[in-house]
Length: 170
Ligand code: SF4
Image (cartoon, rainbow, N blue to C red; front, side, top):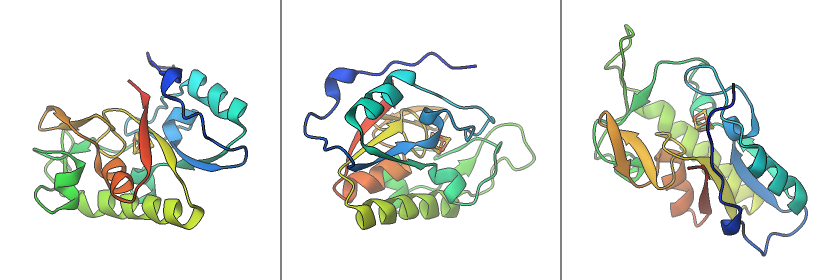
């Protein structure tokens, strides 16, 4: 089932060139990659990207970092993705599973780093990432049982690499 999503097409960059590579969270494209084995398809975003005739590169930082689908949810106990990148906080598995409390930081950092490598190799200027995810959140990220201001780990790494990151879901 598609979840309730909002996409603000007014923020769509006007200078995108046909064929230009852009990064998009896999789940926003309808791929089943979320922690709970679902997707977060945003048809308006897909339509806009198709209209712009860009090359969509699908990325799921958590799966690229080696995590399975589905997987137990994980988030930093405090702070946002910048804090994880700076080693100020780990990413820990949360919830009721037997893995609760285990450290998922290495997988999150690995996924973020792979996404940045793709962005650099392809000269990516823009990305659309899934708001609130501890990897892909843009303005908000799950943290400490709630939401923290700031991006998730992969979006933070992309921003540091000079990529402009938009929330594909709000
Ligand atoms: S929000 Fe990001 S890490 Fe989570 S499933 Fe979507 S693409 Fe993967």
